[in-house]
Length: 416
Ligand SMILES: Nc1ncnc2c1ncn2[C@@H]1O[C@H](COP(=O)(O)OP(=O)(O)OP(=O)(O)O)[C@@H](O)[C@H]1O
Ligand SMILES: [Mg+2]
Image (cartoon, rainbow, N blue to C red; front, side, top):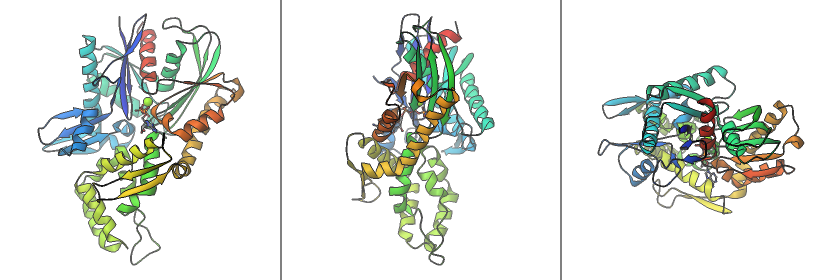
């Protein structure tokens, strides 16, 4: 009997299967264990493509609609945002369903059978400080998966899943702080392992969970707002009232992966056209209007994300935007990135420590810190985590598959 776990991530999605003897991550696209959470409607051949293929078509310049980070819309009004694709209309919820439907059907082809039982991962909080919105997010996700034909759906917190994956290797009693820094959220669990763990005899006790809606996407957003959006008119002042800045909502949307599509609306273009002659540098608005009309906004944020990732190995990097203006390269150094994101790193560490406090423990009680999630690649964040828990052993989990593996292991218990 194969048990299945789905880690529907903000940036990447994985499916793992587990049986009594082993756990494997399915190859959902080529040879990679995870597939980017992206979708592209191609206007040229009316096809819909997913994952890396969606990136490729969008970057290649095919006419169409690119979408990414739709998980972040769960529990917010953006989930009902309407996207017009030629004569059809879709909501972001429809996009979530098409995407998960594609992932599950690829998994089913490899499994050779329909998935009837599924453990789906979820962040500790889909939405910060709003239990109703958080419940709604899970209900929406459950509805989406159920409409795809999965009969039995259980949820598990993503950091607990990561802990279960780690637990397979545990010998003896151990208290673990799990840190999972993804694209949309940062999630933490304190888990106590009571005995030697194995897929079917793991004894663990979850003591506390905490989460915060800060992830890699927010680091992209911060860089974009500080370094890039001013070229597009962010913080422009009015000619007649130089003490006033134009509203920032357009630029916040342009800097947020899951809200870019909100800009692709005639009303936005009309509003920007009205504002253009009123601001001190109308050229910046011309550039922004052209960006939106040519549907290049994701590309700008993609260049920002690329620069962020370069800081894993470089001291300096360029945000390259030749498709906006030939030669438009914005120079940035790692210390500048560290400064810009210092508050977010502090918030993430504070939330991790809150999980320890909620568990009724002190930092000194944590034997092991198990870290996972792609944003652990942010060098200074990684360094701060190591410094914060310098008395504990830090174990690096597989950044892209630890959660999915744990979800599949959990499915063995939930659907025993
Ligand atoms: N080397 C790197 N340096 C900095 N950031 C990185 C690096 N590699 C990946 N990332 C970031 O990691 C994030 C993706 O991580 P991950 O795949 O764990 O997210 P996710 O599981 O899809 O999101 P979530 O769990 O929040 O729903 C992206 O924001 C990406 O930019
Ligand atoms: Mg994740």
